[in-house]
Length: 182
Figure: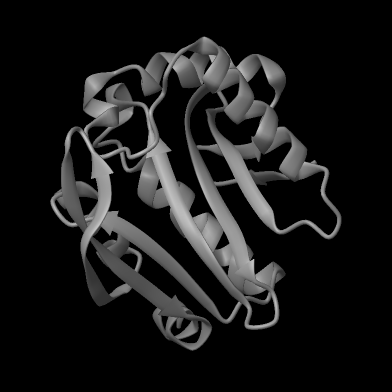
């Protein structure tokens, strides 16, 4: 079981009962504005959480989709994930989703920073990628704050909300991460 502490947060593997909190914030239209996977209903969220739980039992483990928890009350306020896509190349993708009621608290930066540390220091990754909807200014600012640089633009990459959306690809190398930490 993975448990990673930050200054204000606990990042841990998901538990079955976490679906309630995830369903609550995933149902918020502010959260789904740039989210390309339809929430559907309670059953879909339960399936999603069960998938995260299954990932935690894989060996060797390649996917770390963790709950972002406020330690003072144990409330799940989001998710942060680091998913190894190519173990031979040491490449993974990073993603963060946060309850809109917790936006502008710095939680996303704190959780994602700690996941990058985990990826580069413990998983010995070489490269971490993040893909953002081009119009999602908050996500683009987040990856910029993490030191990730834009590597490309995908035209009409995602279909959601009855239209095509462009996405931007960002990345950071282990050497770039270490330079930032010095």
